[in-house]
Image 1 (cartoon, rainbow, N blue to C red):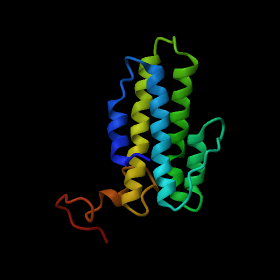
Image 2 (cartoon, rainbow, N blue to C red; image 1 turned 90 degrees about the vertical axis):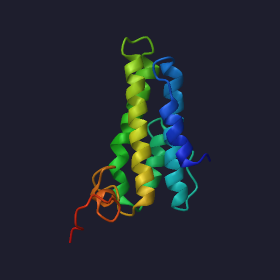
Image 3 (cartoon, rainbow, N blue to C red; image 1 turned 30 degrees about the vertical axis):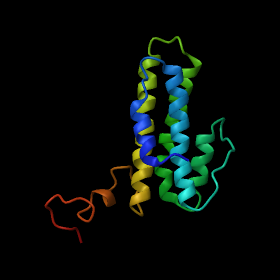
Image 4 (cartoon, one colour; image 1 turned 120 degrees about the horizontal axis):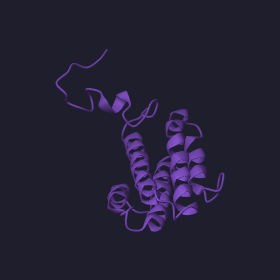
Length: 147
């Protein structure tokens, strides 16, 4: 499995405008790899099953088992699958490149959520911008720590 930081760089390097179909395939794969990191960090073997036709959704389901806060990224995973379908099922659509770019941004959001969750226990109740990662313990903003 490639290091998580390398996945971040790979997502950023995807050129969704030049070849949206290839971009969609890569971004789906990178998103699966992000969830593989989460599942592996929890001591499980990443599943190869599919849910609603996507391994990504099966990996999310596996990763959320026993950790309800991980459900915060469920809609992100579903949105990745949706944008993937938009790009691959209508490759000649005038908005295909824009759809692939949106897929890249949502894949990056998933990366940010999972990498933050791996760093801060309890992150996920709201989103990747949840309070624990922004607290005075993790971010020196010059404010006092909340009680």
